[in-house]
Length: 192
Ligand code: MN
Image 1 (cartoon, protein in one colour):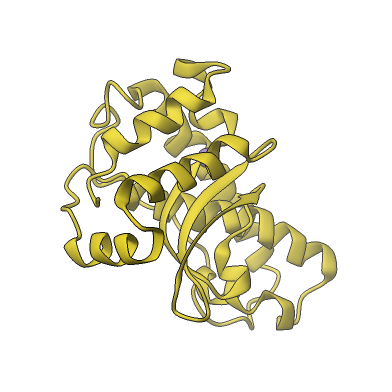
Image 2: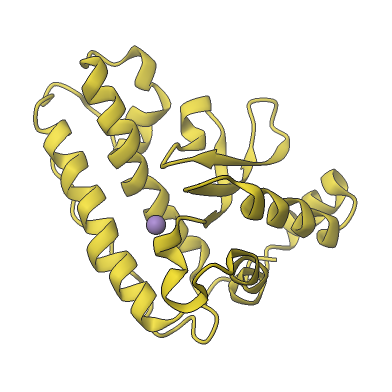
């Protein structure tokens, strides 16, 4: 089973001025393509494995795969999965999710305190990684960051909101100013 680069449901300039067209184009058509290709190279070696990449990621430990290929799948399969989800989170056609807003308020006290917590996770992630809002195994909302392309699916957590804080996600426009990129994420996000 091989996978194609997931389609973007909006134009590369749809998130201007907060996320610029050049960044979106390179991020989607180059970076995400490489993750997709390298994930396919691993999966092609294990044609007996059934299930979507997301399903395989959630049971990676138990897969019949060499240690090095598991690590490659964690990295590049993670890149494939995380970006596919990130493009959906950023979709400008998203509508405010009232149920989610209510649950966030109940869990974190207020929308603002959630945003602060999430932003802090994004800003303080050392090196490359992601900030996440997930639903954990206890069915509770949780905020944290992960390194590299590690997916919350590795812990059987369900991603709800994510932000890519790899430099490739913001460097063209923001250079070293990751905090400004993170703050502007809230302008782009339509779910809350
Ligand atoms: Mn990225």
